[in-house]
Length: 154
Image (cartoon, rainbow, N blue to C red; front, top):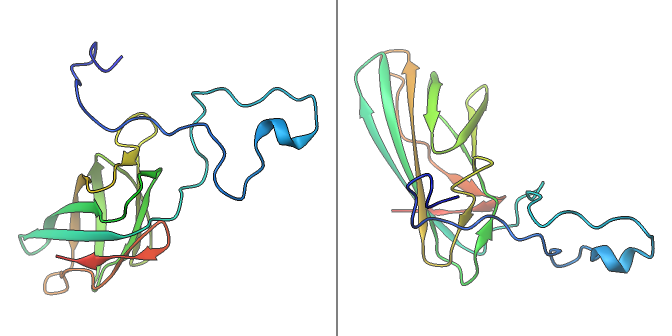
């Protein structure tokens, strides 16, 4: 499918194997059918280490954000959510290469369902967004958390 869509390289889809601490489908003792190999992960795996770069292009009442999330850990992160809070009155109006949700100042950017789903060890993913802001309130978020783990910034 990647070749048909012009994507030769990219991040693989999440694995269907059980995460540590989860019973495997065969260990449940029931005769139920195990999940299909293409079933997406419903909860992101905690990150082993991460670093975030946030670029800001500010035009007063509107802005663009450019975010790069690097996996600094030794294992792949399959399924990701990056959470950050704006320092001022900013609203995301459009996002690409991630799916956004915003509640007040807090923004959650998550991997799309069909691509950009994993961050290999040492690799990174990038997403961007457009937004609006009240003049003089725009700024860079002070912290970022990938799958619940605080990331460093660069």
